[in-house]
Amino acid sequence: MNWKSLLASVLVAPLANALIRFPCSQLVTERLDPLVTPGQVSPHLHQIVGGVRI
Image 1 (cartoon, rainbow, N blue to C red):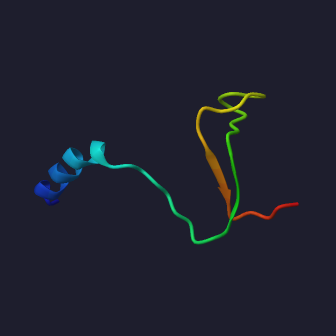
Image 2 (cartoon, rainbow, N blue to C red; image 1 turned 60 degrees about the vertical axis):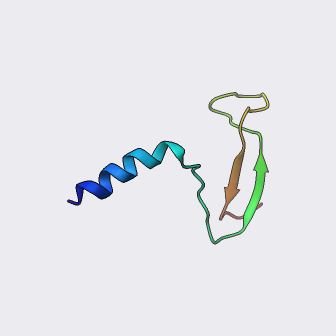
């Protein structure tokens, strides 16, 4: 294992902004989180991608 690369990753990781990108279409972006805040507006966003809208 390359210890310099591991150390660099650990030091830089807190400065990174995480973002996941998918090549499929986005269905919706909602302030909805039924597990954390059921029936309420969520303080964060969720993007639903790659499914089929029925």
